[in-house]
Image (cartoon, helix red, strand yellow):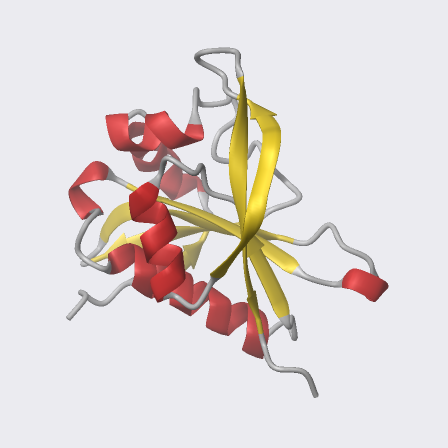
Length: 160
């Protein structure tokens, strides 16, 4: 069983620890270099600190850049290296999905992991996401400066 966690809306008291976690090898590999304003560098996203037993374990965020005709949310997550591999990521993603479905009325949620991030893909599949396809040369990888692919995964509720 996964340990209990809380999602706390991003606050200045989370900054130092989230910046530390962002520099850990497992986070840095997939999130790239930290922006100077992190974790307040994406005002269009709703961010939450993932807290386990009073300790900040990671960050989860959601955003919506859709229109009424194609309304959907997207999410992203990282956990510090000490918190991976024990089901916490899946539980957090499931919690975020419940919030977006129940509290915000979304019917479709997307996430776009790197194809090489097998642990993340498994996590998202366990949380109910399915692979839609591969987006070719979707982002410029900050360290190598090469264009990299992303997977597109989605969770869609049944239609009315």
